[in-house]
Length: 133
Image (tube, rainbow, N blue to C red; front, top):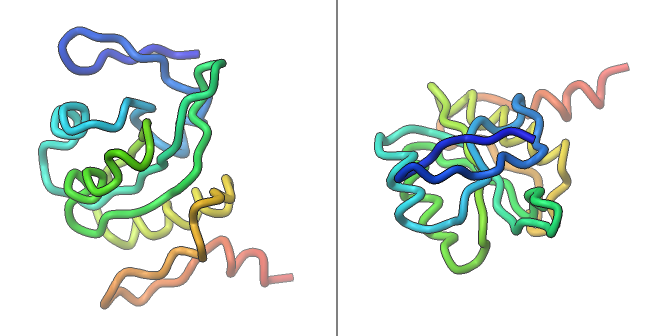
């Protein structure tokens, strides 16, 4: 297990999520944590869920924000208790990462496969890899 300093000198346990999956978290899903971590507008991906008794984030939903991950995460306050997040340089990168999270974790609250961003010509690299011989 790893520890990360966040906020006003508090330390949170970083759950056993591979670092390649999400860079920051899990953190309690509230305005203060979102604003402290994500104060600049950017695309990003996130996982939402609840902490188990062993201190691991049980991922129930994964998603993506094409423009403002801060604003997107705030829509889930009250629906989930914790989040983990990664900011991305482009919407294309965020979409690919969201697909990876979807395929790796199979979150129960995601009703369908992530859609590509509006106006971006991209497809899921994981579905393409599964379809090729």
